[in-house]
Image 1 (cartoon, rainbow, N blue to C red):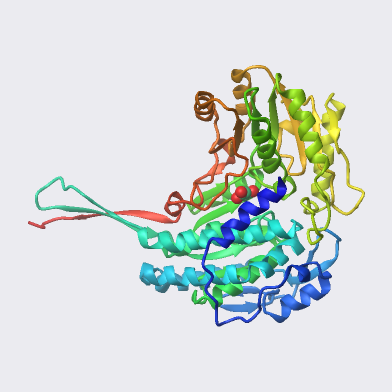
Image 2 (image 1 turned 60 degrees about the horizontal axis):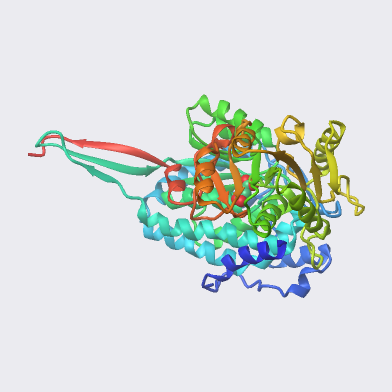
Length: 526
Ligand code: SIN
């Protein structure tokens, strides 16, 4: 099943025509080379210019002003991959100034011009998909096929918004007086602070930066300190694609200082963030002082509901895909598997067999579909949730402990007899653990599913068309997968209800988040 999942994302990559760039001759590598040791991989990435370790401010690669650096580790073996500039408020202020100065010229380009440059960037991302995938596996840990799939997914936002750049239409409103003309213009909001997480080191950046740049905004990106290398490599390719200096800036290091500088600056007109609900709330409060626009894509607590009338094979595939993608480290991963009593035994037994077979290991090793978790804190959190559930009567069906590989590997786990009151069902586990909850009726399933502050993604498996509609409408979630566990795509709106966030990313709706609406009233036109 995981193989099918990787195939899906790879198909996205292969669908597009790849235009060769003249600017960088670092050719794609064979699969054989992907399993090479980290050191030779790092030196090769360095030699082709894709291992940047400085921040990008106004088109220049710069060290932290006080020379400080921060180590980036490979979660699969704890080795240091590189040391990157550890920046703070001074560098962030300069990055904001650079983005502010670049805003007027960038926003005044024609939409077609911005579109072409974004298209060039897309082409370069695809041309270097294997190197970028290797960087993702090195610093984030996901299996190489999944990492290359992320490059295709991430690049698709740049391609989509390169096209949408040309479709930012305004309106003419029928006038209320004969000598008046009323217009609506859509204009870019200005400088955008882009704060992104480690679980998708590329795609969470492109999903925000694609629409921002397409509209004419400029950006200051703060990638996660755990995974800055992919962001820096993508920024290098953006420079090569003809996106002018200052339009896209990257600072990383001291997260509170960078975050505060972005929040305090009146020149930053919008903050867009993907990450934890707790940090999202802080950013929202901080943005209030200067009344910035805010888009937040926060934590989920996705229910995956398997009804008695589901096709067992489809439900198994979908549940595996939505639970174990990226080792359970996505906001849309199933956090609770709700199974109706009539199919409970059959489903849990087949699910257990499939999960037992998931190969865990270093993402560069052949056949691995489950990589390490991002760090020790993540493993401790996952394990504490599992222990809490066990202490309250839940039963481990598969896994349930740290993996014998050590480091931050955790066994793919299924826990049965979970109750919705348990910690593991109340909070996002963000790891390869599937808690299974038994239910009797459709009403009960909907009640359990909605009994949470989160509302990002939900999944249902049923063969009944009527039930599909009924339950999809009743679920208080921004995204609902029906007989499908993989729902993310650049063409559809991604975002949540309740405390899972504000705004939508991707799709035509994603553009609105970066646009102001201006009403122009012209008098004396008679
Ligand atoms: C996320 O985990 O926030 C993003 C997942 C996705 O784009 O599918």
